[in-house]
Structures are given as C-alpha cells and as structure tokens.
Image 1 (cartoon, rainbow, N blue to C red):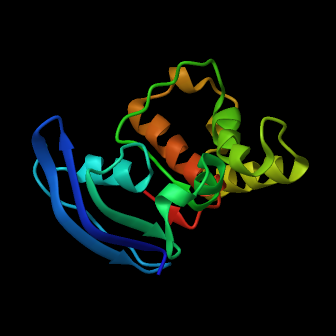
Image 2: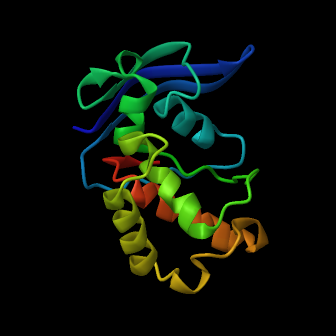
Length: 159
C-alpha cells in the first residue's frame, strides 16, 4: 500500500471541506478524483502532500505517518503537479524539468540527473522546446512541462 488515508477531516477556518475521508491506493494504480468546484479535491491532494495539515485523521505513505517524514524524504516519494503553476524565474524547459531531481541531488545536478531529464524530454516529445523560456510557452505546454518535472522526480506517487 503506497497511500492510506483514515478518517481525514479538514476545514478552512470553520468551513469543513473534507469529512471523514478514507482511501487506499496501491502502487501502480490510477485513482481519479471527480467532483464539482469547491468540493475539496485540491485540498485533499494538498493534505496528502503535507502542504495542508488536517484537523483530524491519519495519512500514511508506505505505512508511515506523513508527519514522520522530512520534506526531502517526502519529495523523493511524492511528486505534486498543481492545477495551476506560476513560473517566477526565467528558466528554460530543461532547467524546469531538472528541478524535479532536486530531492535526489540538492542544488547541484549530477550527470545522472541531466540524463534522466533528457530522457523524460524525449519520452514526452519536448525536444523542440527544450531550451525555450518556460514563460514564453502556452498554459498547456507549461502544464505538460510540470508533469514532465514530476516524472523526472521518479516519485512513487504522483498527485
């Protein structure tokens, strides 16, 4: 079991958004969350990624409470692709995808990190834009690049 959620509750101030959520996910399985706007889908993902702290309940990753992981340990296990991402830096596509390797090698990318990044760029057919500034790309292209960054992270769980 890669992910287990038990009796999860979350509220923004006094507005309960998540109520008694229970979920199990096995490695290699795809789970889809559907629901209307404001129903708590993104909030649940942020709780799983430890961006938000639930009011009640337990989230376990690989049978270990999420609270017991360091940020770096979690980054090796969980990759998170937000619904919308802003790019505040002038990075090209290659550099942006390479950032997914930070959990493995810190700020100094290794040859292995660069090789994994190049492989992901090829697999996702991003070669033609690999050295373009990410800020000059369409929203859809940027989102594909953020997915590529999550793939390059080689995490066991992609949100």
